[in-house]
Length: 156
Image (tube, rainbow, N blue to C red; front, side):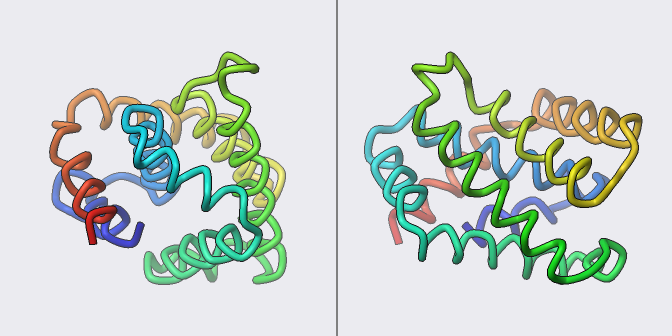
């Protein structure tokens, strides 16, 4: 997963805000799981195991720190609780996505919107701007490049 986060710092995404990158990261992991049965088994395994969920939350937490925005987000405890919540809730949505008729885009929207609004108290216009920015970047970017990065990550 860290390979995907590193790829989001490439020049194509450098100008995006951190939460747009977070949306793209979540979307790509979930979408790859939807498209590839082998990846889906790995993603479901991660999302079904509390230790793996904690690890995923910690990866996002470390990434926010490395992005230089962690100190602007409020208390460390507040951020950690928020990340744990969205990863757990988003994982449940992913696992039940067929029953709920949700796709990776909708789930990643829910996760990022919840984190930004509930745990960071950001205003709706900033949240909407973030989601729009991420979707625009995903439309422009050659997804095959990032999907290849994800495939390499799961091959290692």
